[in-house]
Length: 104
Image (tube, rainbow, N blue to C red):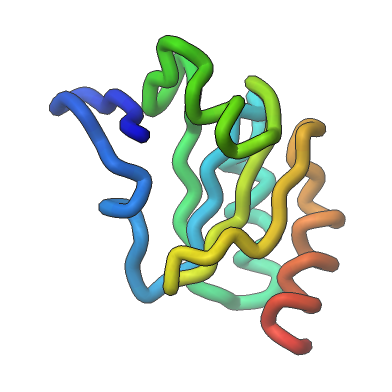
């Protein structure tokens, strides 16, 4: 499944790296993810999916991810989905989730 960025098609797998990854359709999702990562001091990259980020014109990403247009997905560096939410991204919830995922 592909998203569309400024330079054309983007595979979410290409966004993986030595960091945690958050793909989010929440309006303040990127800021929430960055705040959670800063609080715990963990490497994390967040990308918006929607009108102000990577385009999901057919809603395919949201449907396949099982989160809806405003939802978010936390992906480990190995590509495994660690957590997902259909709600707007809450930094406190993400901090709790990161503590579990990272065994902290």
